[in-house]
Image (cartoon, rainbow, N blue to C red; front, side, top):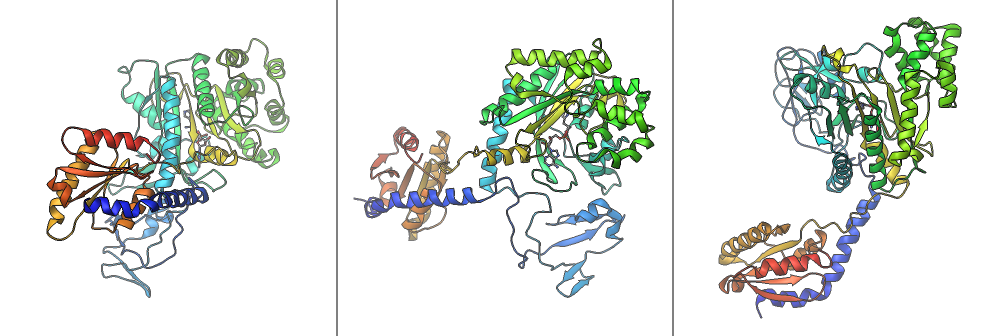
Length: 544
Ligand code: HAM
C-alpha cells in the first residue's frame, strides 16, 4: 500500500460527512444571501492606500484603485484644480503624494459586487435570456458602456436624461455611462447603413447606469436584456418580441397568472392629441408627461402640461382617453374604427392567439412609456400581484434614426432588467438552487514533502493538464496541505474524484484515484487514457 492509499483508508469514513458539511455550508450561505443585491457591507477598517490625483483641467481622475465619487461624476469641476496627488490622513488632507484614508469597502451606492454565488445566479439568468433570444433567431452584439453624452441628450423631459452619469474625460469630451442601449444600437445601425441585411434581429445584455432614486428592483446599475428588430414596419415584429419575452418567463417557471404584459399604441394618443388640436411637435413631450400620470396626480402636472400648450378641458379629455379601464372598443369609438392605431392593436391581439400568448396580454391605454422616442405599439411587463415596478418594457421607435440625422428605419424592441425579475423569482420561490454546483470535477493532490516536492508537483501539473485537455474541470492543490484540508476542499468544490500523486506513484507512472462519494479507490496507470476515462466516469457520479 502506498502512502496515498494509507491516508485514504484512514480518512474514508469522514469523507461523506465532510462533503455534506461542505454542501450545507454552501447552501446555507447561498440561501441566506440576498442574490443580485448589494451584500458586501464591510466596515471601515484600514484598507489599501488610495491615491487620488487631479488632471490639469481640474477633472478628478482615478490613479490606482480609486472610484470617482458621485459628486465628482455629477459636477467634475467640484473636485477643484489640484496640481499634485493629495494625501488624506486620519487627521485631514495634506499635499504630499499619498492618501491614507481608509477605503470604503462597499461598492458605490446603488451598485453591486458579484461574488461567485451571485455570479452563478447572474449567469443562470443571462443563459435563460440568451436561450430565449437564440430561440427566436436573434444575434448577440454589444457596444461600449461609455458613450458620447450627446447620444442621450433629448429635450422631451425624460427622466432618464436627468439621471445620466456624465462627465468630461481627460480630453475634455463630454461622455456618459450608458443609461440604456437603444441609442448605441441606433448609432451602430447608422454607422453601417446600407451594409446591413434587413431585418436586423439583435440582442444584448448590457450593464446600464442611471442615477436613480433607489426602490425595490431599481438600482443605479442594472443589466438589461435587449432584443430589437430593425427594418420591419409590421406588427409581426412586435409579436416575435412579445412571444420571446413570454418564452423567457416560461423558461424560468413564471406563468401568465404571475405576470401580464400591458400593450398600447402611442399612435392612439397621437390621434387623440390631433383631435384636441395639439401639434405633432409636442407629441413626445406630452407622452413623457402622460407616463408620469401613473405616479403623479394630474393636478400636480397641470403646469407642465400648460407649458406644452395643453390645458383645461383639452387636458381632461386627453387624460380621460388614457384611463386604464378603457377597452379597445372604447378607444375605437373615440378615434374611429378606421384608425390605423386601432387596427395595429387589433392585429396584435388577434395574432397573440396564434402565438399562444393571448393570456399574457392586456390592453392598457395608460401605458405610454417614459422614453420620448417611441412612436407606435408600446408594452410593459407587470407582476399581477402589483408589488413590483415594471419588469420589462419596450415598443416601436420608427424615427429614432432620423433624430440622429439618418433616414428613418422602422424599429421595435424591448429592455428587460435583471433586478425586478430576480425579486419576482425570489417571491415565487423560483430561484435555482446552486448547492450541488460542482466547481471542479477532479482535484489533483501532489502528496510529497522535502526533496521530492518539486518532482511530485510537476507530475501533478502533467496529470492536471491531461484531465483538463480531456474536458474535466480540474483543480490542483497548489501548496503543501494536510489531508484533512484537502478532503474538506474537495467537498467544498463538489469534486467527484480526488487524484493523488506521491513519490511512489511518480516512480510507478501511476496515480491513486479516489471516488469521493464512497470508499472506492484505485491505482491507475498513466499509460493510455485509463485515468481520463475513470475520472470522467467517477465525476459523473454523486458529487460530480
Ligand atoms: P426602460 O423602460 O427605461 O426602457 O427600461 C427597460 C427595463 O430595464 C425596465 O422595465 C426595467 O426592467 C429595467 N430598468 C430600467 N431602469 C432600471 C433601474 N434603474 N434599475 C433596475 N432595472 C431597471 C429602455 O431602456 C429601452 N431602451 C428599452 C428598449 C429597447 N426599447 C426598445 N428597445
